Image (tube, rainbow, N blue to C red; front, side):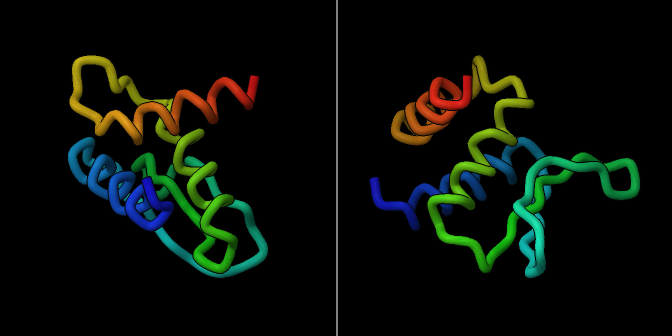
Length: 86
């Protein structure tokens, strides 16, 4: 699956989970954080797409995705990143 399509699928997953994905610019990598007591994922839109995808995959590991439909290619990507991050 193309990287742009994976980004779209991550955004769709975020919407279904009620997780806000904030895109910004600056000197940061990104990840999960709390803003006004709401758990959000922050990604740096100036970073390469591979880095943004990695941040999203690692962040979504914090949510229980079992029992929820996640496109097989997206689930495989998250699992691969999780395996590489061990």
